[in-house]
Length: 225
Length: 199
Image 1 (cartoon, rainbow over the protein chains, first blue to last red):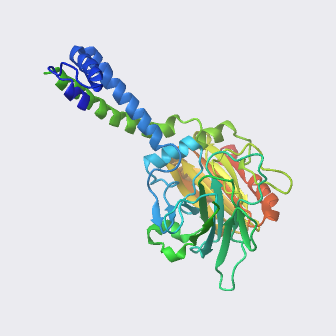
Image 2 (image 1 turned 180 degrees about the horizontal axis):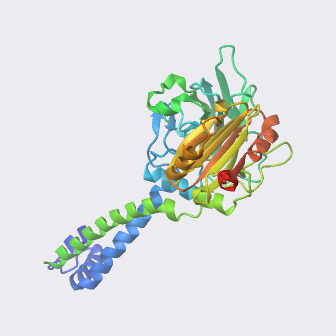
């Protein structure tokens, strides 16, 4: 818009380096016929509309999550009341989301202090989960898996995790072997994400009322430099 | 109108058009997508059993490549039955075992019903998905002295799919979870009354 402003009649003679560009744009704007302006508007509308729709429905859900501490709960992505963006994302990825009566998905891409989860760092995920018949805690990196890397373990289920005497658990996410509940990093570098899936849980219907303390805390221990 | 004004007007029209295109495209994606669960479930419609969508890796056998879920849960076996109620009501029968099992009925707009094995009666879970007209017909033909254990769900749309999830809490239960998904049967409920003489 600023170029069009500056390229108004009377901007001659060209002064700076940008002057030539302004002249050209100004000349195009002045000589543009109705037809070319219509084509310009259609191209702008079509291009911007398609690009923004693609951007909004690529990857994860753009909105609809409930942030609880480091976690984000996605209670409605699979139900009839899901928003059009969630439906479009599901359709593009071929995702089969969890229904409200079935369970709920929680994801985390940051630790408790808001720093992004990174594969070169080590973390502990400790605490307890909201009431559920079963849950699974899984870790994944972005993109396809490296086929050359042996897959030791991707996650823990509520049955197999080792617990303290009071029912709490500590999962150590670390590139190196650890005692206890060791969850290896899925890749050497890059961002990673945690997913906590609660199955047959009553909290899916009231995700907004989950307390921060009811979810496991994600603590960064240190990073490899 | 000055050339600049015309250019600005065209830009403004383009931006408004972009908004309309954005909304239309987002709303149209689920209808035209060929990668969504319903389209894939329909192409792979196996006969009477749930189609395996995510088979768990067991022992030395890795998970097969048929898995198309983007980020599957490595401890949950998933199967899908696509249904088209124009062919008749869909009956989903599941036997409950030691593993936790859940059934969810999805339409085009999302899941409208879900049930877990805790609702099973005598170790069996019988789900019948039907349209409003088929539901009325079943009610009219029902024998009042006969107790039905079916859970009847009226579907808002005629097409959709049923998702079976079986959770394997331990790696040793994964083979059992795969079998439990495979054991769920999805059949079209035919009208038995019509074949009976004298109805």
